[in-house]
Image (cartoon, rainbow, N blue to C red; front, side, top):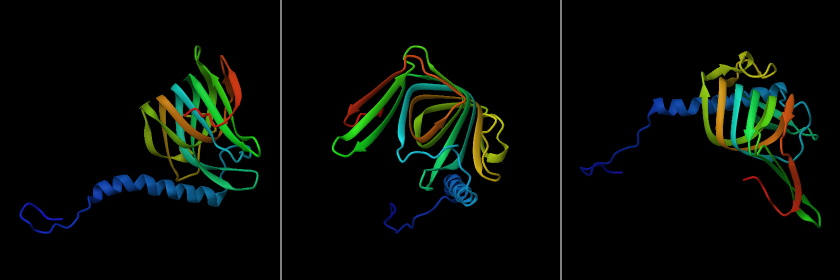
Length: 205
């Protein structure tokens, strides 16, 4: 690369910017490694070999916490997840889908919808996700808190000591798109529930 005077210019790295970007990634990798070494499991049951997709027009919740952990399937495979825990949550226009491939029949889709009028309501909600997207806002968020000291989420929403975590008084997410291995809830009320099974691939997003 040359500058305006034709002189060669070598690339430069902003170490401050690099540190800001790298620290969360390094912390996440270290957290996962320690969690695997200690066998810390998120879901209280063996998860299936299939992830499912969840979407909602909006999610609002009080008492938010998030930290890294792992799930395990029946074969004993360990699956890294980001646990999102909320004390009480409401979801508008919820959609859940999972696609299963069966011999001869091919792909079979199971779709569940609810909350198109009155919202879906959940308490002590835990979602073990591998992907989450949307437009989010938080109040009084704490980023980088020790996972073993979380206090704003459900009572059991804590990870291992020295691991990266975050929490907030409340959370609001619009156009929620999420892929997960498991969901746990103390209560889960689905108004206007509809479940359909159909041939082919029909996912929420």
